[in-house]
Amino acid sequence: MQNTREPNFQAKLAAAGKAVELIESGMNVGLGTGSTASIAIDLIGQKVAREALKIVAVPTSDHTATQALALKIPLTTIEAVGRLDITIDGADQVELKTLSLIKGLGGALVREKIVAFATDKYVIVVDQSKIAEGLGNLVPVPVEIIRFGWSSTCKHLETLGCQLTMRKGADGELYVSDGGNLIADCFFASLSQPVSLEKAINNIAGVVDCGLFLGLNPLVVIGSAGGARVFPGGRL
Ligand code: A5P
Image 1 (cartoon, rainbow, N blue to C red):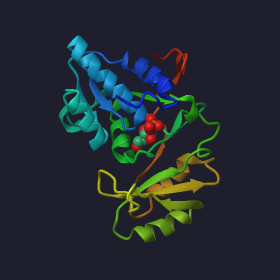
Image 2 (image 1 turned 180 degrees about the vertical axis):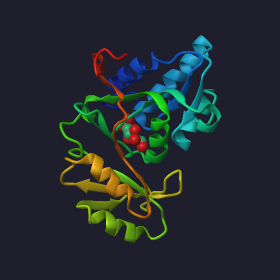
Image 3 (image 1 turned 30 degrees about the vertical axis):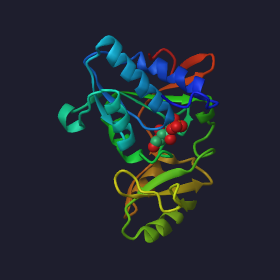
């Protein structure tokens, strides 16, 4: 279980709890990455044990896979199931008017995006701190890049108008993703054209994918100490 003394724990728990209500026996489930998704995974594990729920799950990171296996949630692959009925994942920023997201501060953006696009009901669980008026106001856009020639890839990214910082791990070395790649955190002064920006970023040689999650039409569950609200309303 997560750190229950963390300031936003109750809000994250409320969002995760509401989302997990949507999981039914027989479903193929995508499991997100990050602290809020991790609370949801704990709750799914409890539901599997309590209700003898028959589900199979696709994890979006090695960390999530380890957590799910410890909870006896059976794992599978997209290849084995074709599509997923539901995925529950967190986000780093949500723009409610467009339902656009920035993800990847947890380093799992490539697998998260693949799973998102293989999912019928994409559910995002957040607390209020993730809700922003405009994309990019609060967080950088993480960009996963392959190691070969990474400094050249970064120069090309900078021509798109960002301030770029290479992500480092706790040991001070370059952070390495589950896919064995590096992450460049790109702060853009303006994210007014996210669709064309995503295309421009992903066109650069060496880029695997970026943390702009657009056009996925997620159901956004926003938790608070008093409960959870769902956007767009009426879609649960
Ligand atoms: C993981 O790569 C991210 O996309 C996470 O979904 C994101 O960082 C949210 O994490 P928290 O729920 O811990 O804020």
